[in-house]
Length: 244
Image (cartoon, rainbow, N blue to C red):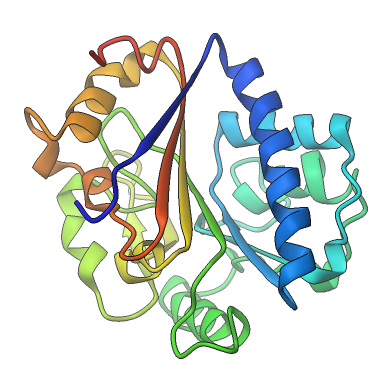
């Protein structure tokens, strides 16, 4: 691996969310003083939603006009659909903090998936870190499933990770639902990648991926390895319970 991951373990997922909200706010405020814009990509799921609610409680004095928010992946559903990652973030985070619409760029899940993957990739190429030749997010937040998937790249479609385009279309192995997702090139170019993982059901996969043991090579999450950036794991004690 290029990067030695930093493990941050909390008693429960609520304490994880509260601590992450404080750390995230301090980092973004510092970056906003140093840069013209701060580029961040979120994933969906229950733990990010707890983080969003912690951010609303904290209500930090972030200059959101200097922040650009994106989504690592989203289901191919309209934004009002209960399974939309963007929709959940809008209700829990964007609307309560009155983050201006000019600061966020959603995946249009209601559009044709393949065309939307191309459009979103082109948008990112145009908007993120415009001073560089390749998009470098300041922070990318990732989750991990009990099957070792991350973003919306599942083990049976792991080849999508190395696709040349910035975004692709993953398909859930059980439901067949399509999802627009970042590919590995975009994730591993980030300055900082943070996994948010909670729950006992993920402890075995966390151990294999973090310690590079067992069946780790079969998991897309094990392909996350920032080329020049930092990698952190935010875990509750349940998810970290099999780490030595």
